[in-house]
Image: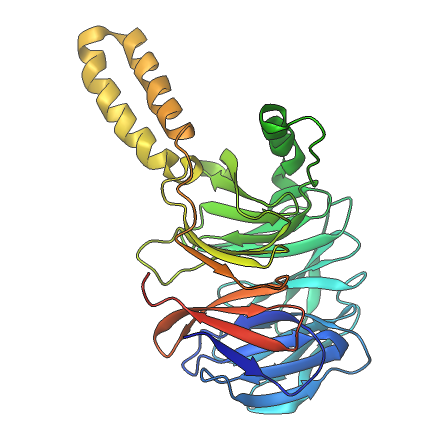
Length: 368
C-alpha cells in the first residue's frame, strides 16, 4: 500500500538516501536547508536546518560504523553524528568550487566525492576532509557521481555537457568518456519524423550495478543510457532505451532483488518505473559472448575459421537487435520526480520518491 510521509515543513524535498545500518534510517534534504531523518515507519527521528539559506542538494550516509550523515549546501559539506544531530562534527567549507550537486561515498567510507556547478569533481579524504584530487574535464555542470563497487579507485561522473566519464582516482584524466549526444543523434537519424524535436541528452543521474560492471545514466532525452565496463576498466559496450516521455531525472540500481540488474527510474513526466535490464544487449553481452564463442568453437572445428567469425557476428547481432521488454512496474506518480531512493523497509523492497512537494511517497514492491 502506498504511503505518504509528512515532515511538517513546506519546502520541496530535493534529495533522499537510505542507511545500510541496522536501524535502516532514511534521510532527506529540502530547499532552504532542512534535513530530516526518518524511521522505517515514516516517523521523523531528527530534524535540523543547515546554516544559511542554501538548499540541501545531497545527503549520504557513511557506510562505516561511525554512523555519520553527510549533507551538502552551497559549496559546503557538513557531517552529523546521528546520536547527536544538533551540531556538525565535521565541516568542509569550500569543499566545492561552486554549488555542490551530488555526494558519493566509497564503500569503506574513507573517500567522499562531490560534483559541483563548475563541472569539477573533488575527492576528499575522510575524516579530515582534505581535498586530494580535483578532476576537471566536464565543460558544464557536473550533476552526479558514483563509485564503482569493489573498485574504490574508480569513479563515474555525469554532467550537463552530455558526457559520462570513468575516472581512476590515481590519475587526473578520465579513463574514458562517452558522449551521449552521439548515441542519441544516431537513434534520431533512424526514428525522427518531419518536424519532430528531441531534447538533448543532458546527463542527470549516474548509477552503477553492485557487480561494478554495468552503468546506467538518466538523461534529458528521456532515455536511460547503459554502459558496460570490461577488463582493464575499458568501455566495452554502450546503448540506450527509452524510459520516459520527458526527461529522465533519476536512475538507480536496486541491489536487493534476484539479480543486480533491476533498475528504478523517474522522470519529468511524473512516471516511476522499475526495469529488468538483464536481457538488454549491453548487460547480456558478456554472457552471450561466452555462449557464442563455445558454439562457434564447436562449429569452427568442422567448418573452419571463416565460419567461426561469421557465427560470432550473428550471435552479437541477435543480442543487439533484441527489443526492450518494457517496465515490470509502471507507476503514475503524477508529479515531476526530484529523487528516487530504493530501500528495504521492514523487509519489503520499496521506492521512496521525492517530488515538488514537502512529502515523501513510498511505493512497496512486494511482488518483485
